[in-house]
Length: 375
Image (cartoon, rainbow, N blue to C red):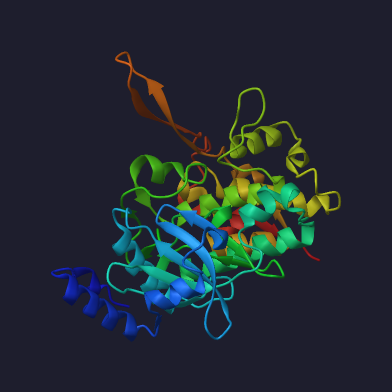
């Protein structure tokens, strides 16, 4: 994979020509802007199905009758072109059943548009977090499949993709669902390539508050464990049916991971479960919640890898809770200044493990976190 196209911005003509040549080498089909206008009825508001920091997504029907999701990059996005090219390069080479497939793109004039496969049930956020208004019920087996599929896709990005990829924005609205509620990870616009010989990348923090790992939000240090943290939050959302970024819990207005930890301390973890879930195996439910807590620990080295998470979710294991430490929490809020203006403040919480005899190598070991139980 090459990023040589990032330097091709000397003139509009050469930029467009070199970008198209670069994209062509990645086997991504090019579409004209007119064909996409036709497919979306001139980007009619009724066809809008989503949006984010870098653009709006429309449903469309191509001339051959196939349905697609069309992501129109916002011209106001400061780094929109770079993000667009990053997404094209990575998605065109990353192939997995739990990743959204890129069908094509448009780089005509100043237009920057991506075409994805269309997924009938939109995002996990729209189905789960607003399920009552949508009339959709996600039972326990569906939620398990969504957790497992998302973990599988993320493990592929971290370990098997070449080069390895850190997504940076794992959240419910970026988990898309097909007609059978099979999950696929979408929106690689914030993703970063992750070379094999680099342990962390210092970078501009990008992501969604409520899902941000504290060390990444506070220090800008990006590792795969930042995605693991976000997945842990997502896991707790899937179990509770509550949004991490939009809900507060208890008298102290705790965020979701704090609430889950408080319930653990009070031995009331099943109180976390979505009231709409009436049938589930309590033993498996408790294991899934505890895996979410393992993923959101304050110290990144104490979190499991996504491969380990897959095993912890899919196998009947007894988690070693002696190694489980308090989750880290990042908050950003506005405080009133004396002059009448507002300033941004950051709060980071989470205690380190008090047992200093447990080394980071031990904490990184799957065997130290779990004991496989015979079936």
